[in-house]
Image (tube, rainbow, N blue to C red):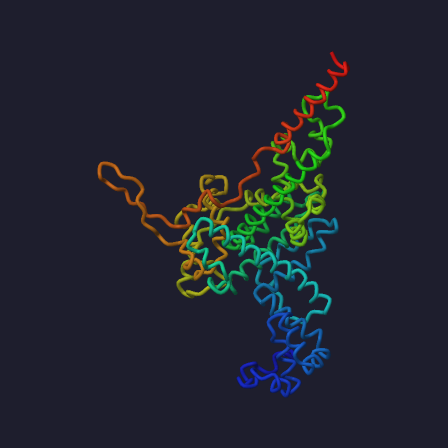
Length: 477
């Protein structure tokens, strides 16, 4: 038994817990237990600033106290996954045989792979916290972004967003589902960032598909909810990069050989940066593949990309455009997944518990499966018509929210509306509010006007001026 579990917190009288002076008068053993019971490092800092006595006790048990608080902050349910992320992070920076990945996948998500709670060294605790803070950053950003987007199409929820945590009760289960999904994404990136290893036992696409197959169906959907969110965010980033490019294009002026070429020859395959914005690059879906590749570059890199505020920072965040176009994408891994098995145990589990749990999905999962055939029923390719429906559901994070939040937002409520009238007959349509979001959510591929096309009018103006100047000087016939 570790030193933090010797005295149960329930044994502390209420008056003791509410009085700072009484807390400091407790035996040292109980003070040590209180330190290890704190929910997070922020609370620890507040206590140590307020109490010199606890600061002194903390200095004697620093490593054990931090270790226990890190476990509390990450939560026991997520901790094994966080440890997996830390242990496999070395794969991102070293070219190792993929047999190491296969060895890991053999036990990933198996019951025996769940690690017992142990005391971490101070160095390991700091590394775990460093990753977890980034995961928490993305979880908070996801909630803010998806709720704000929902409010554009469901105006009734806008007043609730003044203080979303208080009004919607967004506290525990949503954050836990999101942290799990973002940890899964970070682990996926560590395992499959570099697909160029030559001695693969099986193809990297099959390996990444095996990773996703290890997740229950609803955890894969949680993973795809954050996948859609990040693609939306990266697409917004690229919109800004394109505007930066056009501004620089105008400021730099025309090329020296403009009179000889009716088209700007800089948009070719020779320069990766210019090709990234070209029509040929768009036809090759370069920007879409860059976004998919960026998802495996690590959450810290993604954070730097999305927090870049100047043109120079955004340019630097693009990275090496020659290597960040993956041969293997998450979509390809999904295509190789086995069929989704029928899951009657889901409804039985929900009826039995009637509570939000990380071990079972929310009400939106059985609702969606009943309403639309999942794309993986019989293989992803066999039900292409349902892709749009599920992409829309993932776009607003349908499997992230608690049942209470779904109820407050009214997304699964059936509503009655008048569709049309003919010869005094009225057709009444019954639909769910979530159905109204189809077409409004879900990542749209970057198939708009290429930057090369947007710059053409400026190039033609420059060329016209150059030709007129040469003609007036007698340089050309």
